[in-house]
Amino acid sequence: MRERTGVKTLVNNDRKIRGAVLASGNGSNAENIVSFCQKHAETIEIPVIICDQPKAGIISKAEKLGVPCSVIPVMRVDNDTALSARAIQEKKVLDVLSSYNIDWIFLAGYMRIISVDFLSRFADQVLKINRVVNIHPSLLPAFPGKDSYQRAYDAKVKESGVTLHFVDAGVDTGSIIAQKKFTRIPDESFEDFKARGLALEYEVYREFLEQLSKGRINAAGN
Ligand code: GAR
Image (cartoon, rainbow, N blue to C red; front, side, top):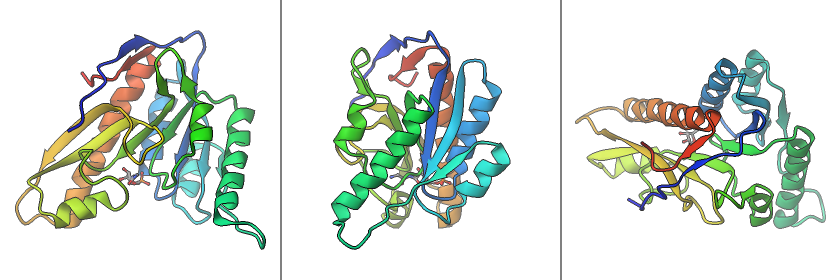
């Protein structure tokens, strides 16, 4: 397990925190984040969700939650390279974020690598982190990248878990805010294994948001 940052700093909380959720899939974490913020609307709000997949479940969930969802896929046109198509998509995402005056990004199953240029827009010189947070479905540094529950399950690990971390230029390498573990139950199905992990993802994100909404970053996770 990576060493935790141990930072415990007051956030400059003169105004309400304005976060955006970025998601690519089913959106259960996005729903969890928005529901939490709607209950703590005096200190933290999510005025927009951004999704890069036009058929993702999060789009209908956002509608039910009453939060606008901007769908911004990577569109590759004739002369574009894959790289420029990704840069164009990110630019559109940044434009939406700036139109909503967003200062925190909550990644919730957003399956894209965020560029260094994007991260630099959310660099916090005081906290010395990027104000971009990601939930990852493993005990990092174990099983970074995609399909982490599946790979941990297939590897028959005795213990798995989830990690909330700040995002840096690497893939799932940013400083850890908090981790939660669960023990594998012998003979449990993959679906049950994953469901137990997801429940911990929601818990860990809510605990972080609670700290943040009180004006505190508790990177030590306690
Ligand atoms: C979650 O398990 C999340 O941790 C994972 O995608 C899932 C999204 O589920 N994220 C990653 O793997 C990022 N590397 P959801 O759409 O129901 O929130």
